[in-house]
Amino acid sequence: MSSRILKGFTVASLALALAACSSVPLDESASGTSTGGTTGSSTSSSGVIMDPFNPQSPLAQQRSIYFDFDSYVVADQYRNTVEMHSSYLRNNPQQNIRVEGNADARGGAEYNLALGQRRSDAVARMMMLMGVNAGQVEAISFGKERPKAFGSTEADYAENRRADINYQR
Image (cartoon, rainbow, N blue to C red; front, side):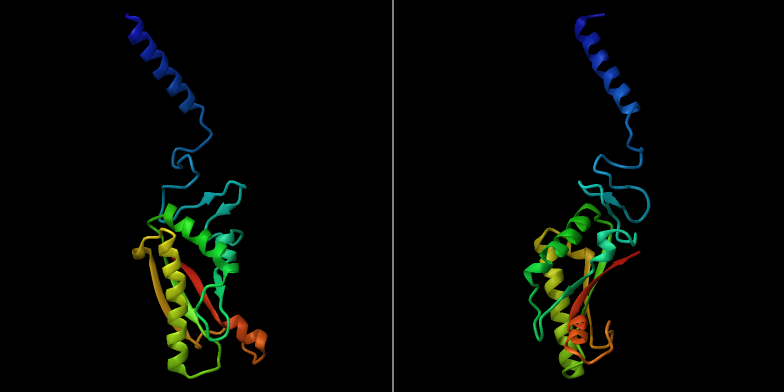
């Protein structure tokens, strides 16, 4: 056997031996994203599970983007939340979401429906600017029809001025 063939055989054998010793299951890529099933979960560099259907995941816990009164501008404090969801969606192109815009009880039904739509569109547009495929995102509005808080204090109103990110199964 020539030394060139022997080197090639040695390299191939070493690669196979290392692959056999891998601690990553065969249905997961090196990044930790599952390729099986309809949705994947991944693990962040800090070891946090990134799975929108796991209640312990930040993707499940941080789904609401809140807005100032009569505004549809995504505040800087929510940029990291939108980035986190956008990163997950870029890495899981089979996953779809619905961004649901909401408004507080003040104002007319038509106005609040339009304001909720502008809020959901603002979040969806930001995600697309972060590289999410437009086909993965649906933006809708519920206006004032789906409140989180039912009181009439400013805190209740603030809780209802939001866009919710909901993952579709």
